[in-house]
Picture 1: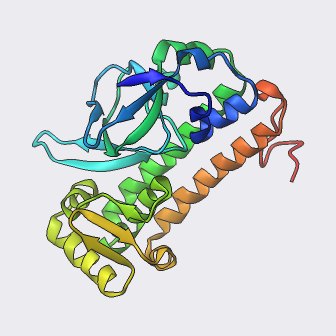
Picture 2 (picture 1 turned 120 degrees about the vertical axis):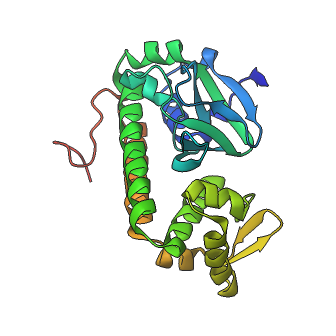
Length: 262
């Protein structure tokens, strides 16, 4: 269900917050505030990208699907990004299935509207290009992680990735769901989760996992979490610098670029 966009809502998505802090208002009349129910599939693989979604406090998973029906997580999109932004890179269909994990709110815009704004250049183009780079790092690192790292460290990485976006210690996920996301069997996840619960790091109860000790999770997660987190920190740094730059992103100076300030 879509409703008119409240004035303050857009500030809950990092990309939109930066855009509207620069009075970049071309998109505002075209944005819709919607509710995303749990388990809802926004896109199937190969489906045309008709809308781009900016999650506020919802979390969306990107899933690779096999011919036998098996799926595995390849990426996650939360308040830091936009689902379907690849439309600006020349894609017209979704390469993966996109499913809502954490039900809540998002903002969406028609693809043709976003493409028109992207073509203007300026701040929106800068932010989406930087975000797509960060998402690429996340997807490629996830693939490597699922191939070479052991279950406990992979589970820690996954829990941290979700925790970053849910903004709550209570994650409404089952071990069966996590196993599907990690492309493994539930018994392996059960053993790893049991060890974490025994150590007082998490608590598992009836389809929910509660994070009790995030610092311990960070110490046990594989390096993949840190690599991806660093890339999103750079994206956040980009948005902070953009907010302090000239309206519409003209002349924005970024880390590592000539003339950038500390």
